[in-house]
Length: 391
Image (cartoon, rainbow, N blue to C red; front, side, top):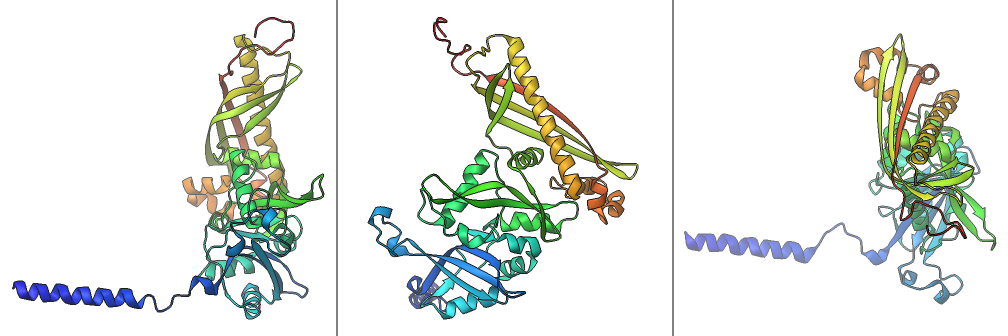
C-alpha cells in the first residue's frame, strides 16, 4: 500500500514538473506586445468610419525624467488609424506595427464630441465584446476631438492617459466629476428611468502656451446620444443627490464676506413614490463641515453666527438640487435616476410611465430638505484683526 502511494505521488510530481516546464501554449512574450494605455475615438472622414488613436507605453523611457528625454524619446507613442469600425481600425493599425496591440491594460477610453453627438453604441459594442476589453476602464467625453486629449501635457505623470485618469480621481475627491467606468455607464445607459452621464473633458492653453486638460462637468446621454451638458455646479448637485459626495468644499456669501466650509460628512436619503400617475420624490441631505475661510470681519464665537452659517449652507443645497431637477426636466433627462428608484418600489405603476419617461419626468414633483452642521471652527474663534488684540 505504501509503495503504491509513493508511485502515485512520484507520477504526480513528474506530471506537474512537465506542465511547469512547457508553460502556457497560447502565451505571448511581453517583448512582442505593444501595451495600450489610452484609446481615443473620433469620427472618421467617411460615414461609419472612426479615427482611432492608441497611446502606447515605451518601457525603455518609462523611468527617465523629462529633462533626460531627447526629441522623439517620450515615454509613449501615439498611433492613429482610420477604419470602418473600431475593430477594422485596430487591425489596420496592427498591420503597420512590429508588435501586437495589447489593450487589456488600457486605462482611459476617450470619445470625441462628434462621436458622442451621433451615437456611441457601435463603439461601446466593440469594447464590451472584446476579449481584452475591461469594464473598469475610465470613460471620458471630449469637448472637441479625443486625439488632442491624448497629446496634452501630462503634468506630473509620464503619460497623458494616466494624467487623465488621475485627473478624474482628484476631481472626485472635490466632487467636481464622476468616476465613470465603462461598467457604470452601461448600467445607466441600459436601465429605463436613468439618463446616463460621463465626465466632459476639454483642452485649454495656460499662460505658458501649454495645452492642458480640464474637467468641465458632465455630458448627458439619452438612447446612446449626447443631448446636453451638466455644468460643474450641477454635476456636484447630481453627486450629492446620488449620495456620492466624499469631500470637497462649499463656498458661501455671508456677512458680506466669502466663507469656505470643508465637507467632513455627507449623507443623502432619497425616496420616490407614485401618486396620481406621477412620481413624487423626497430628497433629504445632511452635511457636516469644518469652517475654513471666514473673511477678515467674521468672528464665529457666537452660536447665533454659526446657526446663520448653517442656515445659509442648507439654503444653498436646496437651491442647487432644485436647479438641477428643473434644468434636466427641460431635457427630459433623469440624471439622478429618480424614475428607476420609483420603479424598484412600484414596478407595476411605473410600467406605463417608463414607456415615455423623458416626457413624464417633466411632471415629477420633488421636495428637498437639507440639514447642515458646522462641527469644527478650526484653532480660533476670531478672525485676525490687526491691532484688535489676541485672536
